[in-house]
Length: 232
Ligand code: ADP
Ligand code: MG
Image: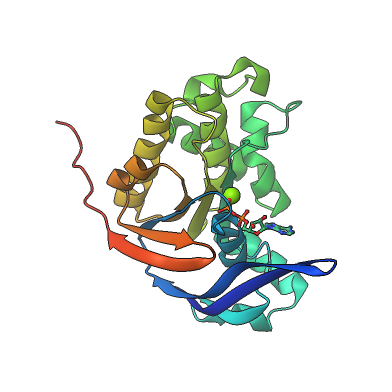
């Protein structure tokens, strides 16, 4: 369970200050697929970075699975991220020199997983995301949708409790976007993967449990979504 209480984030730029988030409170339950939406500049990425422990609130508190995040040291936060959180970004952030397989096992290797285990697990996850036939390819031999699926496989390798995604479909056409959203939905339904995804596309909510709407740094609305069932 994620709980944000009165979270604010103020950026100071010389004499001007930007209130990117103002007094934001919400909870997210395990197994939810939650969207965060709102206009450009409304604070979506700032919020995702804070609940993903990539940034700190100026005020307010964050609790994840009974851990009071504000009380952790930087080292403890790094460890918490490695053990519990996975990230997918708009620009994929793959290492171009490495193969698909190597990109995926990198975080597992960094965490000290034995080689036979990280190889087996990477192959398994790549098959799961439909890239079992692309393991030895490099980034420049893949389509945008395939690159994003590699990034998702990499985010899943350490079995994160929470998967964060910041506009993962922003560079993809709508057919490929559906492909990625179908994958997220399947992970959420079959493995109860908790997913928090920033999007600016309203139609994405048909894949989600709930949408949080930000406007000017505040939660202006929240709605339960009505997911479409899988086609027969
Ligand atoms: P969104 O992801 O919804 O487009 P952001 O969270 O990136 O919005 O930004 C929210 C507000 O905070 C914007 O006004 C943006 O200009 C400002 N902002 C974001 N990051 C920084 C930063 N590092 N320094 C100063 N202002 C920032
Ligand atoms: Mg953003």
